[in-house]
Length: 346
Ligand SMILES: Cc1cc2nc3c(=O)[nH]c(=O)nc-3n(C[C@H](O)[C@H](O)[C@H](O)COP(=O)(O)O)c2cc1C
Image 1: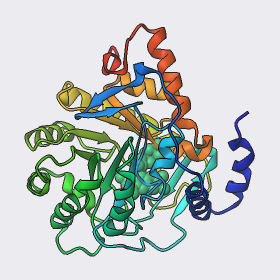
Image 2: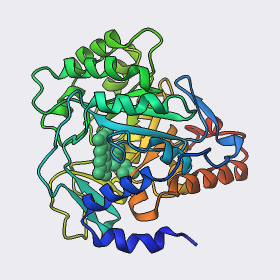
Image 3: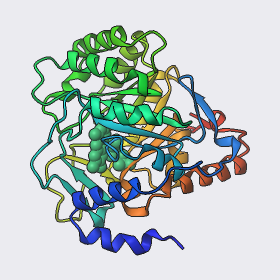
C-alpha cells in the first residue's frame, strides 16, 4: 500500500507552493536515520565520490538545505540542495508554481527564492558529520552586477560543506542566465570557478539547459573538459511547450516532468555523442520509474536525478527506482551500474 495515495489528495487540494512548504515543514520533524539498505550492485564511484545508489533528488526541492538528511533517509542515493545565491532573495511574485496534473508535469518560475548561502552553510555544517552525498547547487542574485563574481563567491562560500558543487547556468527564470552557456562567457565563468575552488575542494558539476542548438553540446563538452569540470547535469527545465492538456499550460516558466522526458533524453544522447564518455553525465528530466532511469543510464548517464515525479508518486520514489534498477542489472547480466552506462545500441 502506497501511503502517499492517501496524502496526495490533501496536498493537491492546496496550492502547489503551500503544499511544498508544508511538506518541508513536516519532513523537518522526521528524525534522520540510517538509509534503507540497497543492493551493492547500485554502488558507483563518479567524479571521485562514492554513491550508494545512482538515483538522486534534483535541485529545487530542498532549496534551503532544510531536509537533505531526511531525503537520504527516504532512500535517495544523493541529494542536491539549492539553488543557493550569495544573498537571500524573495524570488518572483506568487503564484509561481503550477501543477499540470493531466500532464504529470510542473511549471515553475520561482526565480531562485532562497535563504542565501550563509544560512544554508550553517545548516550543512551540521549535516557534513553524517555519511551521505549532499551536493550544493549555486546560482546568482537577480540584481548582481557581476554574475561571474557571484559564482566564484558561491564556490568559495560553499566548498567546505558540499560533496560536490553544481554551477547552475540553466535556470530559465533568471533573465539572461542561460547566455552563460555561450562559448566566451562559459570559458570566463569556468576559469573563475576553477580559480575560486580551494585546493582539495569538491568536484564541480555544470548544469545545462535541455534545448541547445546544433553543435552546442560539443562546444560545452570541450570547454568543460578543458576547465576540469567533473560532470555535466543534463538537464534543467524547458521553456519550450510540447502539446499539453492542463489549464496552466501557457504559464510562463520552466516545464518539468513527463513532457520534458523526450527532450531531456535527446539532450543526454547528444552530450554522450559529443563526449564519448570522456566526462560523466547525470541524466535529469521526466524520470518517473525504473524504466526511465534505466533508459537514461543505457544512454550514457552515470547517475540520474528527479524532482517532478516525486510530486505525483511520493517520497519513496527514489528507493523504488533504485530497487527496480538493481533488478534490471541482474536480469540483463550487468554486475554494476558502471558496466551498464552508455550501453544502448544506436
Ligand atoms: C519547482 C521546481 C524548482 C526548481 N528549482 C531548481 C533550482 O533552484 N535549481 C536547479 O538547478 N534546478 C531547479 N529545478 C529543476 C530540477 O532540478 C530538474 O532539473 C527539472 O525539474 C527536471 O527534472 P524533473 O522532470 O524530474 O523534475 C526546479 C524544478 C522544479 C519543478
